[in-house]
Length: 233
Image (cartoon, rainbow, N blue to C red; front, side):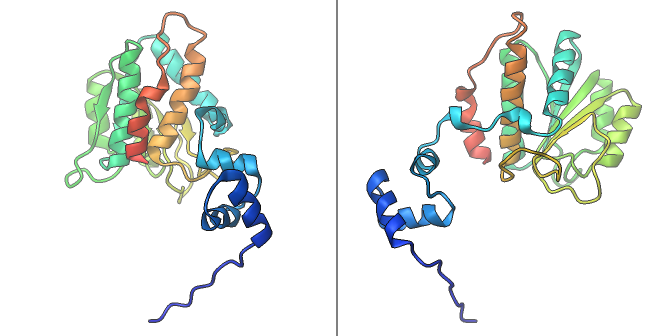
């Protein structure tokens, strides 16, 4: 079947101005215009991003609840489990959290389900195993939004769940302690296109800010983990 391409009409005047100011090709300038990046400073920030220009992670719904619950777990020395999806996004997010917690002196349990035997997301047998190992808090990465039954079971065996995910909620929101997912309708976070590891990185930014109040914990430089964020993204 022959495709009919519909191209946005070029804005020659704006295109020439952006091309000159940013020292980019006219076609690049037009692509920026098509994305709505017509302001020179915003276009430059898009082409040359800086960590200081990232959105405030606390704009994400339930981020404050998630951070306070994790801080409580750290203070009480509760066992924390990180539960990730089995794809690159989930594995890199799981590694990201595990390495951060290790650097602040906290060893975590990690669980990545078997793709064939256990499938996607939380499963009850894995929760039972984590409970036997003493887990009191499960942080999911790249999964959990569709796991209401499993999250209810976790609560029944004394485990709180913090969901960090980026998948579109379908049949309502599970009753987790906190759900950090920019795809929730009432989430005010401006960018909805984060990967699972992107959501996990925002959690660490928020948690790091919270832990600065407690001198007993290290204060890791999050830049060292950006390779994992890039791979997962």
